[in-house]
Image (cartoon, rainbow, N blue to C red):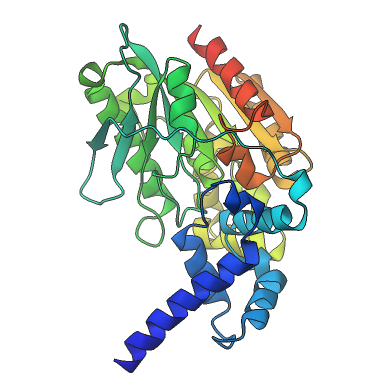
Length: 352
């Protein structure tokens, strides 16, 4: 009983400490709270700190934030920055929540499902925009879509958000296989759903960008559904050339990528989208990266150069005045957001 009470106390205290650390204007505007997975990462990181010493907990997070998974660290940095300087925060339009129209289940695991959002009164088969969430290959949720459904439905696209199993339950190979199976299942139900089974664009963020790129360069994952992938949008990914990334990584990134992709150079290359370029790649690509972020800049440019050389239409575009998390969260919600404008223009080009 005592241990259960301590556990409940620690859970409540951890949530309070994290909220205290990052509370501020962004929270007041109604943005998403830090994910439970991020809170769990912080509690594990600072487990040696006295449970009642909130100052020590905050200091632990500040000193060790680079050890946290990239998405979690981005969440904390953004909220801390917004609290320090309210006047520089990005103005957000209210997010219009759209209910899930249907869920496509493609496996026995609870993560193996796709939420589909359907435009009202669609009179023709419209294209599908399929989102792949990030989370360092070990966390994240397909439920975290922010304002994307409302935005893409307003542009006359179906929108889907694909779940997939994550580490430690599923290695990267199985994560990509999950997403390939999700695309096949969606195409199998395309006539019932109403979207055009041969017009799909993938949008992936962070680790999801790597997975989207891998699926769209290696047909073994999506199988006969591969040809339906007409385009790919990559949001600030850094895993397109895994060996090169590991060779130039800082200690924290080195540990992350080594844990995810292992130390075997052959496996690292197999899981690198750039190693598959030159086969039947998706025909259209847009790689967006945070301006000034060297890792994602270099990886995006390298992949795009390889795609262009192999005959695909591809471009790499820096996005200013954003960060890794906002690049994703502000799609369709921040007025004038450069990433939204770039994605909209890209989709118009791909779908005509």
